[in-house]
Image 1 (cartoon, helix red, strand yellow):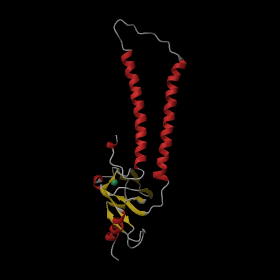
Image 2 (cartoon, protein in one colour):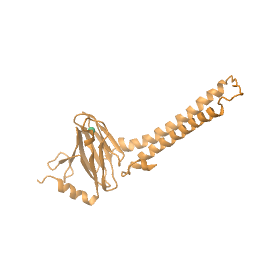
Image 3 (cartoon, helix red, strand yellow):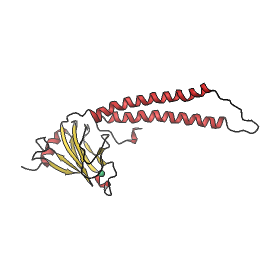
Length: 223
Ligand SMILES: [Cu+2]
């Protein structure tokens, strides 16, 4: 079933996919089961010539059990999904590591402004530089991104990393990921943000660690 998804290249990608599959199989099982029972009853108890309908008076406790027992099972399964989901949510969205590399990203109509710290690895200094919709990171490092929006809602989306975060005007939101596989992937805006929304598709390059320093130095403004 993994062919539904783009390749996963982040440390937590498999955890996020695991939650999807957990929900998929639980909901899928109940869907098939309930529709199966329904179809069975439709066929088994259909009207037939010469067979009179039987009169059933009903039994309160048995009927209650039909409702209460499946409801309890579904509730327990839901609590299981919540517990598993909360574990992954905390790891991805709540317990942010400080980050080996820190970038600032601003979404605006219609591009991502991505500010890099330059060779000194510090944001807010003279060697910072900004690129349009080109996200570069080193492989195997915790990347921390401070996200803002300049005008309307956008959504910063790295499908291969399994990271999606809304960018909200007036708010500063931190997020993180660790991309393990070098290559060129996709950066997208996942919130319909206006007429040029589709042009917010950018490139996302994961550099091998030894290439990274060199890349940062080659792009930094010469002092
Ligand atoms: Cu957008």
